[in-house]
Image 1 (cartoon, rainbow, N blue to C red):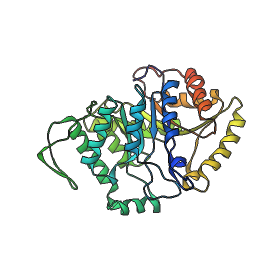
Image 2 (image 1 turned 180 degrees about the vertical axis):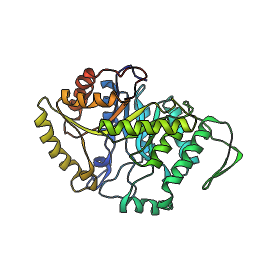
Image 3 (image 1 turned 60 degrees about the vertical axis):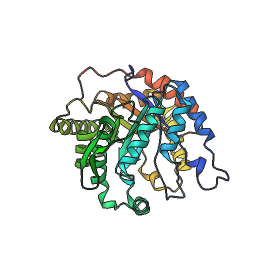
Length: 329
């Protein structure tokens, strides 16, 4: 773990490199960005996991991309969020992630979710041969099974969807046993319970400090209920950022950049973030740090990704104070 008040990760975009209107798909810019993130001193770099069927907003395969990112770096943690686990067979997914962890010498981290909702999400589940109504149950079972595969030589498993006979294991097993797994959860009680029972950390998009604290306490309670007290301490926030010395200008520019970036994509209307001066953004983040936030994965909306990334790490991070040991809220 970093000694900073807050770990910082940066989300890297691939949709514009591989999607519609791209004459020859190329991820060369992504490799340059990955190296830049490591050189700037970030703790981690992240990619998304969608979509196999959405032509207007595609991304390259996340596991393949993570492998290449690992080989371009030496200290940077490599992550994917939100990883749509239910769409995949957990034995194959666990094996693939374990292999990337070995390639990276133990630098893989994942933020898992039930998968995409809405018509496009349903289309993905149909295309992958998985009933969408089973997404939550499949995620829960997969988390249990993958953890066992990562930490045991052989696994006996008897679930609703998957059966292992006690003579099954994966090779290689990961360097990290288990691979750090943050479970994405909003206000849904089942998701918060899943985070407490199976997560090494908890991923949220909640920016309100009081709501964050309520959800944090629920995850803690579910972890204690499962006999896992203090095992789900990390809390990660996935959020959008745009900074400027003039806070009002930052908010005006962010609105324009969001429109340019998302266009008519449905995610546009659901996107909120930290838009303002470094001092304003640091104050908002501090309220979350004081309630237990340990990591931010930042999506930058700006044509000046390098400048924004430097400002976030060098100015905002410097204004943050660590929370007192043992204090959650």
